[in-house]
Amino acid sequence: MIDRRVVLASALSLGGLGLVPAALATPRLRPAAFRRDPFLLGVASGYPQPHGMILWTRLIVDLLSPDGGVGPDDIEVGFEIAMDPAFRHTVQTGLTRAEAVFAHSVHLEVRGLEPGRSYYYRFRAGEHRSPVGRTWTSPSVGQPQLPLRIGVASCQHYEQGYYHAYRHMLETGVDLIAHLGDYIYEGNTAEPVRRHDRGECQNLADYRLRYAWYRSDPALRDAHAACPWVMTHDDHEVDNDYAGEQSENPGEQPTFVARRAAAYQAYFEHMPLPRESLLTGGGLQLYRTLTVGDLLGLHVLDTRQYRSPQPCPAPPRQGGSRVFVDTCPSWNDAARSMLGQTQEGWLQQQLRESRTRWNLLAQSVVFSLVDEDPGPRQLHWNDSWAGYPAARLRLLEAVRDSGAANPVILGGDIHAFIAAEQRIDAADSGSPIITSELVTTSISSGPPPQRVIDAYNRDTLNVHYADGSHRGYLWLQLSPQQLEARMIGFDSVKEPTATARTLANLRIEADRRGLQKV
Image 1 (cartoon, rainbow, N blue to C red):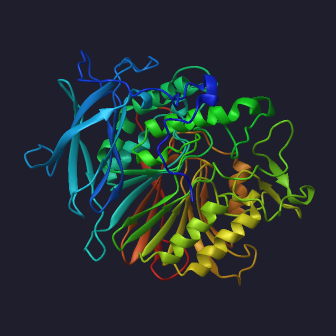
Image 2 (cartoon, helix red, strand yellow):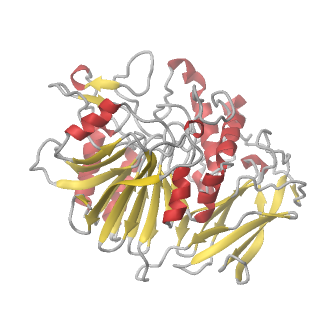
Image 3 (cartoon, helix red, strand yellow):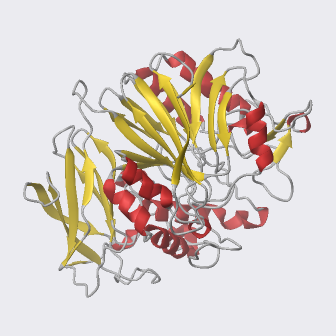
């Protein structure tokens, strides 16, 4: 379907973006020798399989240096994997390479472990050892397993607040964290709660600096070390409201494809992703299915890289706008896609072949269709699934026709909690529920307009809960019998401490479509 070869980033026809020249010789490998701790960004794991997972770290001693203060050479890095946090029962040790071409990041693809158990890991560079991370392998099919707890996160503008949600996730207990996008923001905030580097990211050095700043946050660093992550991106990892290869602002279009490739490379460098995720030509392979025993098929989608441009934007912007449907001739164009034809076909196949008890579709933007105009006309935000009605219908029909057990859509982006049913005809009470959507609010990014939340709450047929006044996260617990969802929020994230509250508690019973309030 897609060329999945690892990029050494394709011909720097991408020029001044700082990407890797294809003809660059492999740097020499030198032993590590650091006067300062090179593990400032901690450790992470991701995408657990029955016999392994991805382990990540990045060597860096200076957050503000273009090369992290490490230099031009590849660095030898040791690793240890054990069955206990004291490393008395070590099961694997070895050496790997922190490549200068990828900002001295490590993406260690571990194999040969036992299924369905916890492991602990750490890295070594010279005399320095990294923090200890905890991870796990997925159970094999048929292997007994405990209920699975998932923390769902989205939209974490560093300058707009503190990451209290991650602290609370670890206190409550999560086995897996799913991040649905806007891990960083490419720009700045007018009145920051706390400040990171200034300016809007344009090239690889800019994006690397921004990720390093975010990843140095203690709460985020601890959350990465505590359990595996899965992730997908949204727009702010590159540029607000971009769509495929189209930028938000027409004046930036000539350099946008190169800028996007730089942003994608920096994203890869700072996430526990397989090496095959970074593609020749400056693309990212993010859509994939994580299977956890018989319990869960987690289908991670990419709603940015392959989408058609938003319909009928308000000039001079090319990005998101609120659009009256009757003024937009291209609104219902069946050729327009959110996922792209290849990803649509891939998802249909994954759903048809799934044999797990639950099937979660983890994606970045709101799926629920809500008319924001209280009058007779239809008003929709064109950057969400509402702006892609034909593609939205195709996805609902694919879910309906697949036979996949207990499908649930996860969403983010809107900076609000939403729990809603999804029907082929959203306005018809006789139209059966195909699936439900659970949308998480932002970790720290500011709230949406209240009129938008009011529109959701006017839909008494489909919407069970909508709130945009709290920052926080979505906590899920899956068992063979039910899915429990808690919407956990904070009144404010502008202070260094905050108290969490469960704002809504819902459940979905297995083999019975629809949300129930607890």
